[in-house]
Image (cartoon, rainbow, N blue to C red):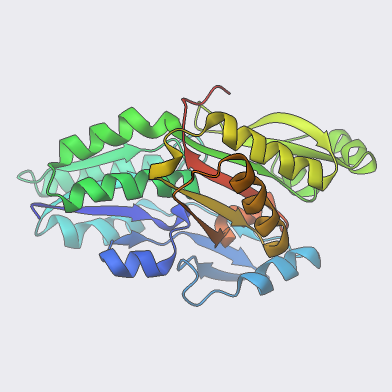
Length: 290
């Protein structure tokens, strides 16, 4: 290839896929119990331990990668090749500024190179869906600009519909107020949340009870998915395998023509903000309405 295709671990890409296609990866940091880790896509991580610690009251913290870290990731590639970096949403972290700063520095040092950054306006499996579509074009030998345009044209079609098990994690992250979390918990309210068209996490609706939340996610999947016979729906969960299986069954009942489905864990960086018990349906469909 004339250029290298690279992304970050906030995509929650299973490491088996990373290995299969040899995709260079920026690994994002998090801190648990005062110890810093890097999300290695589940290769060495114990997700059950991570979410168990959260249930026990531990508060994991995520942080930005500094510009120096991006320089260390990018420069060995730019020394030899052009680079396309497919990044998680700029609206969920200020780290994009460090990416741009690193790019500016390296292009001054290697002016003969091309270095494109594509903001997916997504994170986790919605980002992963875009990565896999773009990487298929990359493997076909499409030029960097064409691959970047495909992501830009399709990023508002990549969906995540999910629910959380405990509102306190959304409260901690500033997504809802303390009062809303308290009364929502008292009333057994479960928010349905989406990857929004502004690249942020957006509330869609509230329902009462976990099973109703799963049914609504399945219904919204059926309403929004396009060309299900040609895609794989990604079911995600944060240590909630039984609910993930129920959701998959509900979706298949409503959209039996789906080509395939796969269940993967929510990684620790995203899980630090949504908490254990999170379950999601992720797919390509109509343009985001919220």
